Length: 130
Image (cartoon, rainbow, N blue to C red):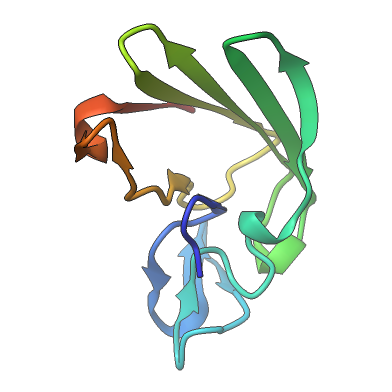
């Protein structure tokens, strides 16, 4: 269900759907039994992202996650850039900024396809610069 999706605010499972930040307990909606998976029922993959920039070989998407979205504190502005290179490789760069501590941020691109007959890891690079 997450193939090719941008996962966030938090990739993976948040045990019990809760976390504590600076002494405040936050409840995240659960969508995987007792846990919150990939940011909750309305994670980043459920939104249409704005195209910020595009060229023949790259595109940058942007979205702002509002304070309180899916229970997470702080406004989080995220950019994801997909770049194609002559060597048949794809690079994915993440940038994020926030107006205050937001808890763990862990975005992920859920891509497991094969490229040019090789495993995707051979031609896939990903950087997270938060």
